[in-house]
Length: 549
Image (cartoon, rainbow, N blue to C red):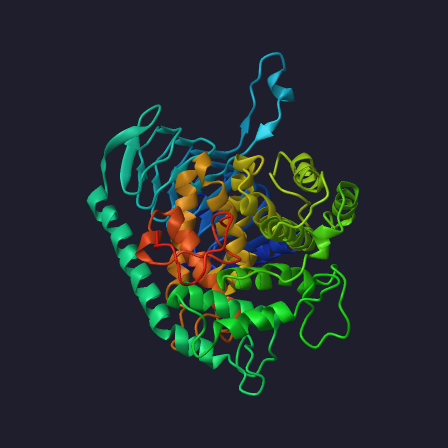
């Protein structure tokens, strides 16, 4: 039986019968049970006469899908949205909150290729995705084409064919759509960067004022070593984090420390035979497959670099390498099952190569070529990355592994990454996964591993508006999370602050701000593990800091 609410659902929950409401709840529950990647918020309405064939569907509170609507692809629809009859939403599409979609309109987040010589039905599909921000009115008979971003509070007038990005607050119409007038004058939007600039300056000023207290809080009184947070055991990484935080915010060594003693301690932890820095308290020297030992190539090496020193001994990871052994090691890494772990070890190899070059150690001919050649020839042209997504974590390990591998190699050695536009597509797709990027679930690893690849590929200018929107949104969540006297937590919401979280978030804020052209408001620029440019060929001591840019 057809109910009027199938076509006019906006008052369903206030006027429908108890039996109709019960049936609607059962309908949504059945859909969610049949589709693991479908979810429905509170007081939604989904007509039984709508055609739903989505891979992923996330419908926000009080949103509705009316009869005759046709939805496919990967869809995230915010709260208080309407998908009216008979509309089409297909491909990779995100609606913000309060998006109203008029009758007979289509939002098409995919396209066909059209190379000559191949019938259209045999052409591959492409998808750049469509992003529609909050409070947007899509009039009747509107078509929005793939790759478009529509800014907040915009209006797409009836019959518009939207082929390019629509600024926030604009009213557009025609075929192709053009600016008709402003719903929200651009002067109002122009104030937003100024407000963000003030917030960035306030954040950095507060961090600088409290940096000494943050560092002293994590200093273990018994050993005189740094732990990540009070009560935790001291670690090698925590020493590096303390040096980096002090360098970044204070332009000095950590409070009450002696530079010579810090250098001697860090150099003394290196095993002369293997060149490795094992975890504190380790029995013997773990092999390079040990995750902490591999990371110490980064954390200890950069701490020494900031202190104006270097490793005392060659790093065996590169000293003993040949072109064949590098290729064999890369082939053996778990790219298909754990691309993050694979990228972690590539980062160590690339950083060991950096320190060997800086020290003037002998490097077997062909080692660098084997490392970069393998990465170039194994990068997936479709994703720009290495490895495959997984059923349980999606793109998380792929993107995080790309950050680690590209940071230690292409970024650190000043070589452009392959397939930059594909990288941007993959990162933006990943950043829409609420499992990792809902405000309550943000952690430093996941956000850094999005911010750095977007910064690294920024010269492409590709999907620039979406990149900037993401950077601004993430900054909005992060800037208020500095905690008095203790810094920032690795897991942004609820966990205890520590040195690792503080150091990483300081770098993340810089990258996000720089994507928006606002990093100068911070007055600092990372120079350690998370530095944005390749290290200089000679040491820059803490007494000869570059000016903030």
